Length: 350
Image (cartoon, rainbow, N blue to C red):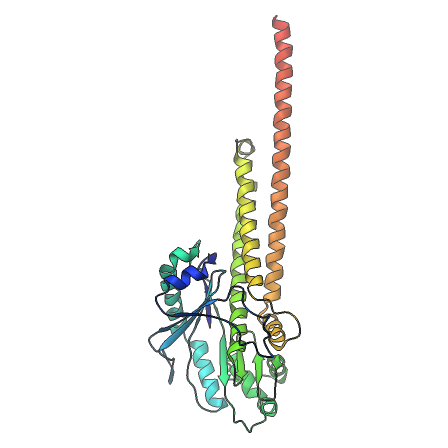
C-alpha cells in the first residue's frame, strides 16, 4: 500500500464519472467485526486497472493495480505479490520488498496520471512529495494448525519478516514486534507493526481497509504538519522582517489577517476531513485494531503536533489582530493631535 496526497479535496461522485476504468465504492462487509454503523463517510472510490507486472527478486506483482481515492485528497495504490513457501522464504520476500524502489516509482506515476485524469473533480490539485508505504503479508496457514501456537513458536521468524531484518532480533525486540497481536476467532490473527503487518484471515478485506486508512491518515497528518510548519515560518518571518513604516501601509494588516485566517481554516478543514472520514469507536474488533494500528504508526503524536500548530496559528492571528487594533488607535490619536495642533496654529494666525 502506497499513499499519496493529490489535492485538498475530491468530489467523489464527479471523480467516478471522470475515471477511465470501472469504479466501485469501498465499504465494509458489516459482520460482527464491522457493524452497520461502521463505514466511510463518504465511501472512497475504488479503481482496478491493468498494470505491467514488476519483478522483485524471484517474485513479481500481479498485472493489476488497485487504487482507492478518498474525499480528503489522498490516494492509496496497492500492488499484490503472489507468494507460496515457508517462513524463511517469506523473509526473503520481505527483504526484497524493503529494498525495492520500482514499486514506489510505479505508484507515483499512477498518482500523477490520476491527477491529470480527475483534475476537474479535485480541489487545489497538487501531488505532494511525501509518500507513505505499508506492507501487509496476507498468509494462509494449514487449517489444522493452531494459529496462536504457530505465532508463539515462530515469533523470531515472524518478527524478522515484519522488520525486514536478515539477522536475528533480540528477545526484547521480538516481544515488542509481536506485542500488537489481535485475534477475533480461532482461525484469524493480525500482527501490526509500524511499517508492516502479518494478516492471517480467511476474510481479510475489512482488516485491509482499516490498515489502508491508517496508512493514509499517517500521510495526511505528516503532510498537514509540514504545511503548518511552512505557514508558521512564513508568518513569523513576515512579522519580524517588516519595517515600522510597512505596518502603516493601508490594507496590509487586513490582508495579513485574512492570510493567517485562511491558513488556519485550511488546516482545520483538512484535519476534520481525515478524522471524520471513518469513525471507529467502541470495543468492536475493527475499532480496537484501528486504535492499535494508529498507536503503532505514531499517528496520535502527529495529531497532537498538528493541533498544537493550529493553536499557534490562532495565537498568531489574535496577536496580529490586537496589534492592528492598536495601530488603528494610534493612527486615530495622531489625527486628533494633528487636528488640535492645526487649530492652535490657526488661532495664532487669525
